[in-house]
Amino acid sequence: MIDVLYVEDEQNLAMIVTDSLEDQGFAVRHRENGQEALSAFKRVKPDIVVLDIMMPLMDGFTVAVEIRKLDPQIPILFLSAMTQTEDVVQGFKLGANDYVRKPFKIEELIVRIESLVKRRKIGIHQVYIIGDYVLDTTKNSLSYGEEKEKLSFRECELLRRLFEHKDTVVPRDEIIKAYWNDDTYFTGRSLDVFISRIRKYLSKDERIKITNVRGIGYMLNIG
Image (tube, rainbow, N blue to C red; front, side, top):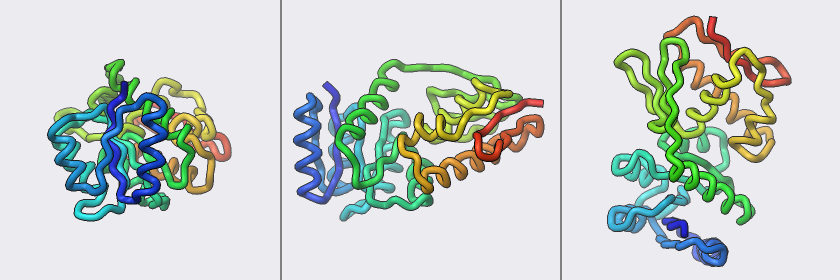
């Protein structure tokens, strides 16, 4: 049974989501604001945290930051009506593993929750040497000598995918399907932002290039 800490201040939606998850065998602890959520997390750690962002007393972004201080590995999924690309990017920068836009289908939410929890329980630990960098997929970190950059789950997975297919074009639609699950204009923009951030992380090793093959996808090369 997956233990979900679900934080949502909209009562009708919270009731529907809670009932739907419980019908599928999840154990759900619902909290109405960020302060209650943080207190609940400190008392009993769940398998995953599902967070709204716009909430009273403490917003979801702040809750995520505080939870990450307590547990760097717990899966965090934002479930929000804030759908602008900059909101999504901000969520991942603060440590989210996934971001689902409202309105959403409960089936999609269930699949994403199960995927995040399964990945954590499997405990996949792989280290990749990318030029002069070291990518640790368990710690979601990218190291360059003594310097270490904390990556979001999606940044880490995207870099891993590009490296595993280095010197080969990885199609845009394949990336979007794997990590966003919806092919829209805003999703495409979000992917472009993520690629730009990864290029910046890798900029200290001039041999590493991520090329945008226009209309097709991206290719990582190490010269």
